[in-house]
Image (cartoon, rainbow, N blue to C red; front, side, top):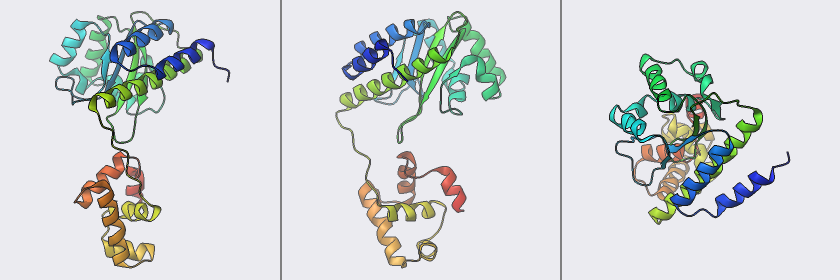
Length: 250
């Protein structure tokens, strides 16, 4: 697929972004070019007390933001809830087909329309070991979501979210790399995550119990954790393990 010169310039511009002001400027520009008016680039966290270094870059109306926080709408936001069921972007008109809307969620959608959010498009963003995120584009008018618009909106969302992550990491000052685990360590962790003991793991893998213990202890040292349960949780967050795989092993 041939990329348009405009999108190539946008992608190059994202690589040079190093502060929130520049990120907001390029988000505002691309939001307008895509045919929308408002944007929200954020992690799915408690907006009343957001964790340090979480991403929260929006130009929604102040009155709507205040209402979201005051009524804690972020807990039940239907757009965020629908994004948990999708890997690719979706139009807001698709939301009732993705999730079953509660009365409160229908109320949230109705109130959002009063603040210029009648229609929109949302792109889910998930990075192993980090909060779930989304980039949403909203409009006070119905939007013709052509394949062209949807495709470019996804590019804008992903590149801007990556720029936001880079800014957050720079502010934090450190960014610990994901520990590297061997295949044998991963084999042990998958089975351990399903609740098996070292002896049971050794029987399944055909190795000694001491070997299993060594693999798990080595993995714990690499993650600098002292509990096996925490090791499993960290490995899940970092994408080494999947819930489906753990359930299959039970």
